[in-house]
Length: 552
Image (cartoon, rainbow, N blue to C red; front, side, top):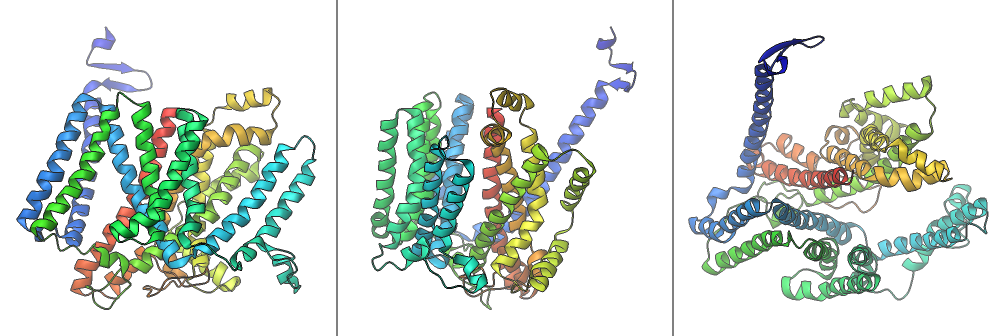
């Protein structure tokens, strides 16, 4: 038969050969492996210069080999042969712990150095009150007309955040008559401690998902109990952290809220709902226990570790004229503030534009022209967006050069086409049958978008946004064009403050301070920190993508 022959001929395809297909498959595999090997060699080379593992004592290597490396490999190997699902569960737990610890450090930097806890609490409260008013009005939507609800909700948000006449009165030169709720809270004569304010905001934000997760597993009463336990644990961290680890109350509360409590909730839920795979939780226990045991043995015996440039001093110090004293702390804080600004500007605009173009815009020449331009803008070099930011925000609008607002707005323009394209693809992936079913049940287009399309497309939208933020955090040319300082010795304290960033700091070390010490020590250390942050952000996108694929 023709299908059993090694070579045959098919109309439209030419000669069909299994040999050619096999060769093509292995060529693709070879090219993939070649790229991975080259990238791995580069990363190992940079990491070796930054961490210098060979400078450690032989006893240090032997200790961690016996307490950390070998137990981890043995446990992972056993799980791989026994149950791959258990291995995935253990690896996910380890990744969640590592990534959450990294992000908790970034959040702690913001509240320790930049944003006072009272200001944060005031604006969270000022935002929560009108949200409660809006929800209450929505529950009575059958009695109150839409325009009445819309106007009352808008006035509630405006008055709570700005007061009356607020920013409109500032433009018109009118005096403030009614202060905003945020201003009233900040001027209160009695103010709780900073860690209490963070516990009432970030702690509640962390305990609420724990309660909902526990409720989905068991019942509502159990969920409420677990939420209370999580909140109590966060409050207790304010005392345990300073006493046991020498960490301040504010960082301890943030660490417990962002890293410890979510990881513990995930482990508890997995242990309860996945009995066949719970053995995989032995992997994070071995990893954490082995690392702590190795550190204890090394400190007890007195073995010298690697003379790494990525140490606590490097992460908590500002720039210096000597490589030994140089640090990345202000640049790390600057990158975090820039990403917050970029996300706040690009996410709502990009998702809104994508939703309009996919669901509301007619198919005509105008929309097709917009589609082509969005695709073209996604490939424009970043330096062009730097010139755009300089001309638009600095020259035309008169904003100070090199500030958080200007830098964040410029980077938001850079990734906005990427956010729009990824959001459109996610919205387009929602089956049209689901929309038709929603319309068939009498739902309006807005109700269909809110209850059907956006919830199903949100994981894909979030994945694309995180990957776009990963590109923005590594950009240097736009920041140079808008006049951001190469090095920064102090932290920015407002949106009008000058800001630097990690890639700009590394660039300045490699160019303006291109001595042997800077080039061989500080630059590799900065690259390792930057790559670690990028990998942490991309790992979140990968997890969201995989979960979305499983759900679909």
